[in-house]
Amino acid sequence: MKTLKIKPKYILFSLLGIACIVVAVLCIIKATSSIKYKEALSQSEIIDHTQIIFTADGGNGNEIPKNTIYAVDDLYQKGFTSIKIDARLTKDKKWVSLADEKISFVTNGIGKVYDYSYYELLNYNIKNAPETDGAVIELVQDTVQYAYNNGFSVIVYVHENDKAAIKELTGILSDINMGKISIASSDVKVLEYIEKIQPVINTIYCVDEITDEAIAACETYKFYSLCFNAANNKNTHEDFDKLFDKGIHSICTGADSLKEMEEMYQLGIRHFINDTVQIGDVQ
Image (cartoon, rainbow, N blue to C red; front, side, top):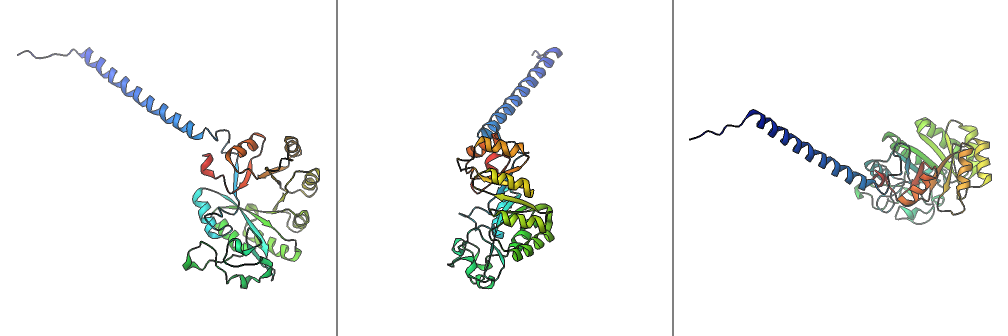
């Protein structure tokens, strides 16, 4: 019986051939993965994730009550690191976290915030919150402190102009962390007053339309940012250029889809506040 003998050079050629096949297969797998990755990013590849800032507008109100610790927990799980919290005054001059002046927005009660004292508001539970928790509308400082403890930067939107109450609020917020908290308002007088009493807190002027008066106010009072509504068609490319030329930071609301956000990004906007487009949509 003859024994099959394989010359050493053939063994070497066979091993090289196998190695080439393995390398080729790995290259194909890598290329396929790369294609899938690019396909996943195709709708948002324009956005530079290292530059853009996403601020959640209190949380997704359709699922989790806005301006609550439950919203903060939900946003933390979704990867957000910035949140806007609305501050409204009660009848007894307490700042509470509520996106709408009507308490029916998040509770089983009726009426408006300023119709109630804070302790009267405690009679109404937050909708959709765990029943055993007895969740209620929170004081702004408690919501902000909780968000800060979870690594969030916070924008506090002040809805009323009451100097004594504002002075108390800014003092409380500065004790938490001035570097990670900004105060926003659509009332230039509110921000002007804050600039005088707490100039180290960043202030954000919120407008629907970018006007020369709004730009002048930012320059005069050194507001940190101008927040405008992208859904307002009166805001043009020329208006954006004015902001950039004068070195005014800009924040955009009203870009409620990824496409709209990308359009704003192309024009130079890097900070977005909204509820609809989430971090996972652009990563």
